[in-house]
Picture (spheres, rainbow, N blue to C red):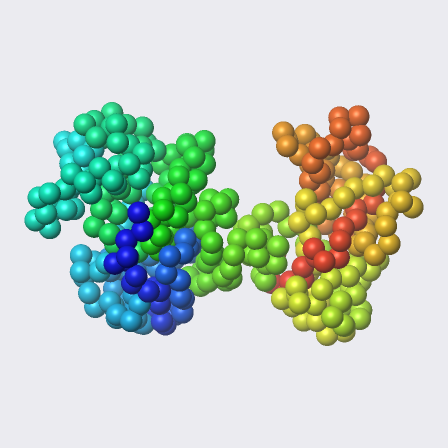
Length: 373
Ligand code: ATP
C-alpha cells in the first residue's frame, strides 16, 4: 500500500515558536521528524503540543521559525496547499454521506470521478469494506475514527497529523485503536505525527516520542530509552512511577558511587543527567519493577554487586498482573516496588522488614535542583 510518490522527506521545524500576546505557547523549537516514522508529541494539557501540530498543518502561523517538508519550505503555504492532512478527536465526518462517499470526498473535490478502486482499497486498509453503505451514526466511535483516517489518507498526504484522535474513545477501544493505527501506519509507510497526553498511548504506538513541558521539548527518544533513562524529573514522573532518592556523589568514575539513605548506591555515570563531580547533589531513580524485595532475614542470599536499601513495608496490594508494595525507607521517600508472579502465600505483609535490591545498571541520576513533581 506504500505509495512511491510519498517520498517527501523529513518534517523539519527550525526555531519555530508561537506567542499569544505576552504568553509563549511554544518556545523556539528545533525538531526533525524522520520520514516514515510514527512520531508522538506527548505532554500534559497546555504544554503546546497541539499548537506545534497546528503549525505543521498550517492552521497556526508561527511567530518565528520555519517548517520544511523535505527540501520544501512550507511555512507560508496555506493548509490545503501542504501535502499534509489532519485527523481530529471529533471525527468531523459528513453525517448525511455514507462511509464510501465520506472517503471519496477528497478525490471528488479534486475532480477525480473514477474513485471506486482507491476508495475500496482505503476501506480495506481500515477494515471497513463491509460498512461502505452505512451512515456515520451507524458505526461505533472506533469505526468512525477509522473512516476519518481513511478520508485523511485518500489523497496520499506525505504526513498525517493526528490530534488526540482517540480521546473520545473508552479505554478498551483506545487500546485496540492504538494497535490499529500502528498497523495502518506501517502499511502506508508515511509519517504519522500523533498528539497525546497519554504516556502509555505514545509508548505503544510511536518509534520516537518528544516529551513536551511548558512549551519546550524536554526529551526526545525511543519510548524505552525515555522510560529507562529519563534526563529530567518531569520526564521520569510523566512516563511512569519513579522512586527518586536524594543522594550525593561520593566517588566519581564511570560508575558513580553515591551516598543515599545512610548507605551507598552505584549507578553508571552515563545514565546521569546531573552533576557527577564528587560532592555533587543528585536524585537517584529506579523504576518500581526493577526492584526485588527480600525479607530482611534472607538478606544474606542477595548477590554481591546489587544496590540495596533497607525498609519496612507499609502497604501491599494485588493489582492483577503484579503485586505492588509501598516501602518506608531511610532513603527518605516511600519507595514503590512492583513484583510479578508472586504466589499469594509469598506476598510480604505490611510491617515486614525488607531489603530492596536491584541491578545498579538500571539506576538513573537526575539533577537535584529540579523540583520533584
Ligand atoms: P491540550 O491537550 O489541552 O490541547 P496542548 O498541549 O495541546 O493542550 P496547546 O493547545 O498547544 O496545548 O496550547 C498551549 C497553550 O497555548 C495553552 O496554555 C493554551 O491556553 C494557549 N493557547 C492556545 N491557543 C491560544 C490562542 N488562540 N490564544 C491564546 N492562547 C492560546
